[in-house]
Length: 376
Ligand SMILES: [Zn+2]
Figure 1 (cartoon, rainbow, N blue to C red):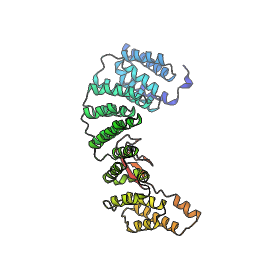
Figure 2 (cartoon, rainbow, N blue to C red):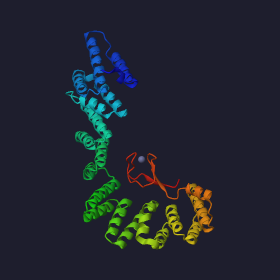
Figure 3 (cartoon, helix red, strand yellow):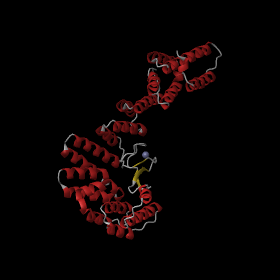
Figure 4 (cartoon, protein in one colour):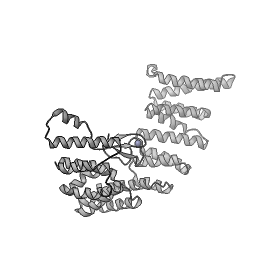
């Protein structure tokens, strides 16, 4: 064994476990001597794991688990520590060896399977993770955490139909998630050139959740690709009317379809949501890009906000349009303006993750529909 390979953390793990064991099974008799020997074997087996002597580690741990069922929870914890350190292969060796023990009670068995599934998930083996979480669900379909983990692994593995089945079969009433998964299936159909099938999944998504912005947008794009401009516009309008806060997501598409005739489209939606900062700032962006300065000034003049972030951005637009109008060619001024973000960003309401591109499922906390539009 290469002792230098063992760092302080491992020694700490050994010491902590040693203390636990020495206190719980303190030497008093032959049994105590056996416990002491077992402890030494246990330290040895962990050292095999550390030294990457995989086969020997598995053998030692498997034998120890068979002989010392009372230590199983400690091994479980050691495996979890390896996982926390990012040493997933070692975590898996420890956790999988625990399955060797016969007659494990259901509660402990579930903990071991959960640990193995989580190790695989962290290692990026989502199919294997799903297999383990499925075992948990098969053992107890009422375990909502296990159902969630199973669905999550399937989604990570892009097994959308299976994820949809989990949502439906376990009565998880999350119509918004169902709709996004239907869109994902439709997108796969589109990539494979099956536009008709893609359309039917996007439509199914809208039927499942009539507020699904993503579904309207994807269907609109497909209609546009097939030269159905009117249908496409109708869908985009519907999407914005459902959630005008996400207008920036489709802003480029609107101008791609309508070219310079976008104004009427925006005015029609603004008539329904005249105080929407997202709509106003998005339109200002187009007007400024095309030098339609008088229209921009009118829009700024008619807008009024209570919230500080919108007031600041409106003032920025007022300054910018003024500078363009007066043809002020001052580098410091433009540098200052360039530092201000005209376009909104998207922040997860649950975990605070922020990015410029919209997300329907947070890449950080993996929750659906937590994206909030922000302007700072
Ligand atoms: Zn999040």
